[in-house]
Amino acid sequence: MAPSPSRARPRLAVTLGDPRGIGPEVVAKALAAGPLQADVLVIGADGQVGGMPAKSRIGVGPWHAEDDEHAAGRLAAVAVERAAQLARVGEVDAIVTGPTHKHALHAAGYHYPGLTEFLAHLAGDVEVAMMLAAGSLRVVLVTTHIPLRDVPGAVTAERVITAGRITSAALKHWWGIPRPRLAVCAINPHAGEGGLFGDEDERVLAPAAHALDAAGPLPADTVFVKALRGEFDAVLTPYHDVGMTAVKVAGFGKGVNVTLGLPFPRTAPDHGTAFDIAGRNIADPGSMRAALELAVQLAGKARPKAPE
Image 1 (cartoon, rainbow, N blue to C red):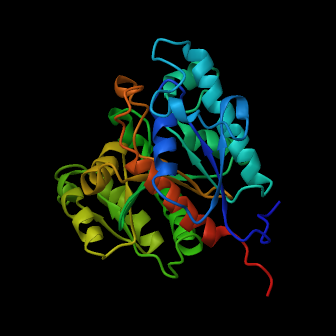
Image 2: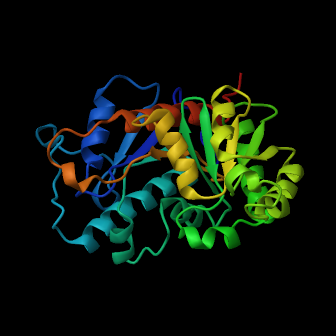
């Protein structure tokens, strides 16, 4: 079912994440930081709508790190399932997910590398890509949570092209960029230096960049500088840490994780559960606030226009 155009403002579903972590705290703080141009439904335990922690518990949370991992993982996952269900039937226009713990999700029987892949399944096993955004810098990961030793074999021309096409579609439809400018980040130092430092850039990435009409492959030590200067709308990066490092250096505490390819926008803060500071009321809500604000922006683009 398509989102209803009858609502005056977008509606967001927000999950609290792992209850043992800082998710409940940063959600509460981010929502209290100022008005959003959207209506917010908070999804709490067992998928219940309106599960915001009581005001007296903001920054404390109902759990501690030693609590049952299986139960914590299940609560976090069920909330995400509920949010995705609401988005799929048009009850909300975008979802924002609090930080989850991958080990807890696995302990609860949710065997996905992360929420990106979990949401892809919930949306009908669609093809997705993970974007990290910090201000004007947008980075898309061609591979996500895999060991570095497996990256060269996993970075195929087909995988790069798929990520690029998903990225271009999202930039057009959600960001309103009519002709997105993409760059492909090299996998080897100096983009392989003519094969001296590896042939993956010439053999795999160059043909993929050509198929996408994208720049590159460009060395990692220059491509992000060019993007920050406005030369590109997004950079496709071959592996997790090269992309994540660029985003976190460019905007630590303000970065947003965006899942591209879903039938609805999904954003999340670019940090984890931070069990070490949970319950101390010192967590920075900046990234969660940025995730909420970007979700409002993308929901506004994704919603059908109300009839005149």
